[in-house]
Amino acid sequence: MNNPEAHSNQLIVIPRSQHNISRKSISDAALKVLYRLSNSGHRACLVGGGVRDLLLGVHPKDFDVATDATPEEIRALFKNSRIIGRRFRLVHIRFGRDIIEVATFRAHSEDSPKTELDTHGRILRDNTFGDIEEDAIRRDFTINALYYDIHDFSMLDYAGGLQDIEQRQLRLIGDATTRYQEDPVRMLRAIRFAAKLDFSIEASAADAIHECGRLLAVIPPARMFDEVVKLFHSGCARRVFELLREYKLLRYLVPALDEWLQEEPSELMLDFIDQALVNTDNRVNSGQPVSPGFIFAVLLWPVVLQQANQIQSDRQRMIPALVQVGETVMKRQVRHISIPRRFSQMARDIWSSQPRFHRTQGKQAQRLLEFPVFRAAYDFMCIQAMVGLFPYHLSRWWTDFQVDQDIATVAEPEKTRRPRRRRRKRSAD
Ligand code: ATP
Ligand code: MG
Image (cartoon, rainbow, N blue to C red; front, side):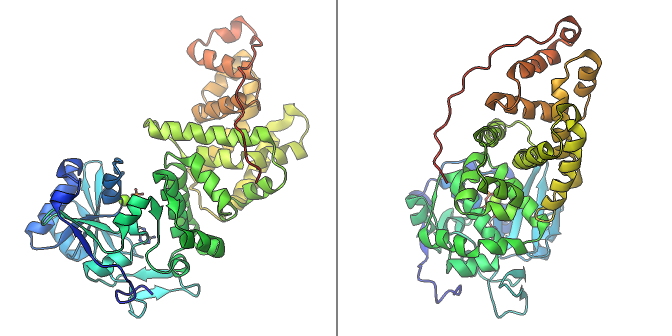
């Protein structure tokens, strides 16, 4: 399927005079790497997200370089580099806070002894070096297989990516089912790029997600964590969430939430998730810090709260119930996505501190303010208050209290009306 003969696309070369990628928009670090490789007699190209995003007028997140130099040759050229990866060996070159990822051109070769597949057809290891054309067609989407050649500043399109950029669609290179079988994470990448670039997923790539979704169960939980964080910290988490539901993939990421969504979910709680994702998107897009702990706290909150309410109806005793349920829910979750302990602990602390926001009396309030997760727990509570899951006047009180801690001893919180929020129309699903 994925060999050059079977692939009908012809190489399209676009000379510098006919495309709009300028060196000014490429980071100094990436240029340095490209030039040094090229001056040492190697072929060196910018590839992947950097080229794609520049063509779309989007600011690239990072720059990836592809070259015919081997990892050892790259390593020898850059003191500030190290070889990483097992599945694919790559070189990371560090320039201050910037890292340029450099990959040697690789071939996708099913027959090669260097390609290891598991029983589902998943690629476990693939370090067969190849030429640039082979490197292009082993990539996932056509729009990710465009090269900017530092030698003459031309653009090379081996897979029809330019046309797909024009048509704003994500098309897998080769047969969609096979490509997802080789690496099921490509389904999550499809969702992420569709959300981030506002592209459609071409029909065969979309259909195959329904067929192959279950393969996500074989992805190691640590890789799932990386991908899920990329999805929810993409700056378009709200759209990602919609797409995950549409493509029925949520069950492989957060099965407890998926089950909760199957039973008539409460509108308020759906609003809460929506609002929390909007909040995360706003933070990402304005450069404020975000944490995976907060995301998992949000996604599992409907389940945690429902189960805590089932075992404890007395609000005064809610904290131990949330602690207990939080532990069980998290235990199940980490079987699918291995959430590093500091983040799972953060989610559990956010949950169990929610009832404490009802207590506005002096010392207790002061103590909550000193909690390590206070800031995240407070944001979480404010989002609950916005949608009507928590008394709005209390959220106002906590906002004021952080500015002027004397108010706790001066007055009881005053009941103010929550501003009316316009409900978003929701299609039934
Ligand atoms: P961004 O960096 O904006 O998230 P990207 O497309 O650059 O997007 P990376 O994860 O940085 O994504 O990967 C760089 C390139 O490597 C991709 O553009 C693609 O060509 C190739 N690639 C990455 N992951 C896969 C995969 N799972 N299967 C095939 N090719 C992949
Ligand atoms: Mg990239």
